[in-house]
Amino acid sequence: MNELSNFQFPLPPDPSVGVPPRCAANAVDLLLEARRDMTPPQWREFATTCFRAHPAFPFLCEEPCAAYSFRKPRGYAGDAVLLDLLYGGASSAPLIQAASETGRELYRQTSRLPTPLAIRHRRDYLARRLGDLCTRGGRSRVLSVACGHLREAASLLERDTWPERLVALDQDARSLAVVQKEYAGRAVECLNMSALRLLSPRLDLGEFDFIYSAGLTDYLEDEFVERLIAALARRLAPGGRLLICNMTPETCGAAYMEAVMDWWLIYRTPAEMEKLAASTGLPWGVFVSQDRHVVYLELRRGR
Image 1 (cartoon, rainbow, N blue to C red):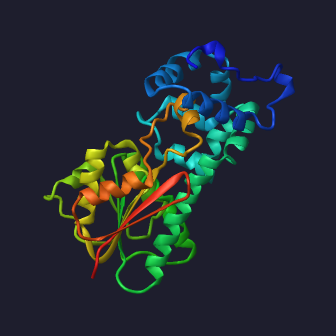
Image 2 (cartoon, one colour):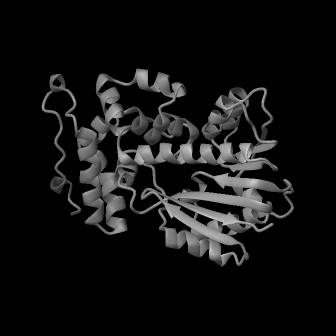
Image 3 (cartoon, helix red, strand yellow):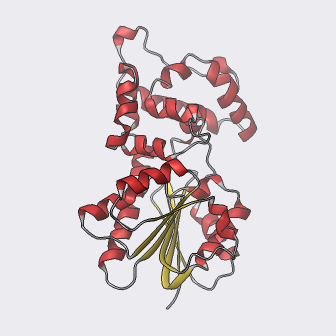
């Protein structure tokens, strides 16, 4: 299936009809079916050339997440503003309000689909892990790698707790400016640098009890993921935990993200993530869990 004529997307026949109730879900399903029928090169050609000449493309791009992602105002996909849109927080309100009525309805539909739900679940899972660390007693030194807007830390404010040290690292200075504003009055060390700087042993940040990255490895080739896991794990204090999240090949919104949002990730299975951790040669416990769309890789250093 590599001809545009073979892709049948049912558009509303008239603007006055409005957006059909399952419009977004149908788009996700149709694009996923098309992706499964093609080789990766065929799919990329279809997604980036043929599909974008189809009337479905500008229609779907009225949805705020799709419109923002495709524009890439910060020069890269999956930035913190896009994640805020997927989270549905108050900071995303201006972009939603600026959308057309069609766009807002598509946003309401897409926000209930499995992939955005999984991304919100990932944030909530990280929030629980941070909360547990802060309330269990003992040391609580945290490093968040590619932290974005650090939304998972918001629940700590509600619980009136905070790590004894929190280092937020991101290459985007604008994201760190939001972190400083949102968590003013709390101890947050913002480091404006690429996470790949962590590969250098000369970068001394100290030891941490919890290091995590929500989505960085989705953009990195295996060689760099393996090196990053090793570099982060070596910064764990005795008894520390390293948590890496990666989207899985079962992510049902992958085709929509690629064709409509121009958001391309590197999807990995639990076995692939476990293999990358094992390749580091570090003699620490490796644990893998999955919620279909996200795989959680955890390394635990002994005391």
